[in-house]
Length: 550
Figure 1: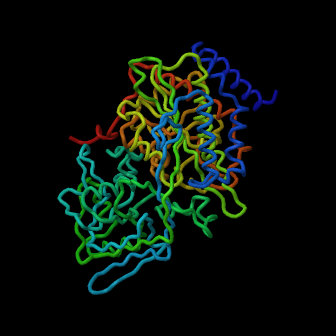
Figure 2: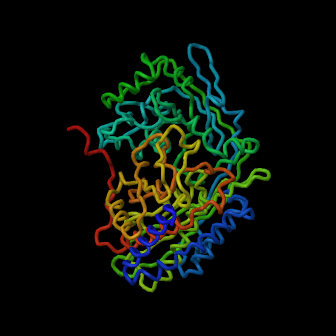
Figure 3: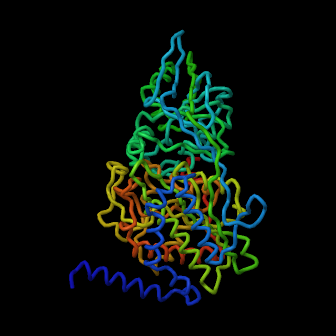
């Protein structure tokens, strides 16, 4: 017998034997996780007929209707209500869709009686309403307010009515001992949180600048690494935002050259300011003398429309614990089509969508039900900014303070391989054929332990690399993140990037169906643990705070 075949055979035998040890009252649902069903469902969702499932387009609407019908066939309860107040498997997500006019994007510096203009690609931005904002400029460090860490870039700084310049990412991100979760990301590192923080302090706009010393691509560089950006260049995908978005001020990403010019009256240099903050975590924030800018953003079109989260509920069996919730989630949208090219999105994220539907069928078919309730949710418009997830987190169908764990599937069907997305940024193990990345342990080590225990019956290799890297911003890039912002123990289950990521070549025949089935079996067993264990996973609000010096 060839050695490779023998290894696969032994692994399959081990898994079969181990799964035989699963409690008898969980076995019927486990048996519902079948590779042939995964193949059939992904083949449908990633077919040409669904036209790449672009948000607010007919193909994506069809995928939502399919999910809702599968929830109903499985026997779930509708988790939402429609406009007439009747039970529904669809939660409306009101959106604004708009097309930024890149040629009209403009930032103007006014200093010493002179004006300097910058356009794309030195500055980029988008905002649903057109924007014309002029104000003095203030430098606000990394734009972070973290009182539990004794860190605040806004301490003693008046930014009311001002435009703030902030560095991307976080202080000390190359230091494993940093109070900001070592080399991993915390919630403070994302632009979304920085803009909300600036808004709360009274700023009228934010300019996001690259850290002068950084070991990762800038935001301008990241755009070039994602496949659909260049291929959609002739007809860019429109931007979308929540109609009731909490973000009310615009932001722009600026280049290093613009940053240097804006900070030139600070009495220091951007590099020295960053080095100083990183050295002692003391504020270098200040108003920039003789520095006023005008920010101009314009849209060529704008419309209001509705996307849909598909939501179904399996009620828990224990009267005391049934009000508590476990969420199993994914997103249904992808990147649509351009001409004869279709972004099929088999791995991203037909795999996750089918994962949620498969587990809905499995739990519904199991005669014994878990003690806590399970909310199955497939989100709208993830590719446009996690919009469906942000909406459900802001308009929860069940209380978030009694939501005990969230399993979010986004790309669970492939092996991780080198790609333009990751080149030069992270090391990828030589063999990823049995590997699953779990992202989120900094905020809930208990969750990780529960999954690791359940994995004893499945035998996957569990990888936490993405919890310890800052170059790819992976922590912010899927639908678990809005729930982490609400203190829910939420992990992204992810098999990794590959060369077909965000390309038309992400097709159904490339999915590793045996591996995907193992991942779903692990999720099934982990959900039983989350739903039944006496002490659910604890959420750690401020990872790294224990490292803070007294």
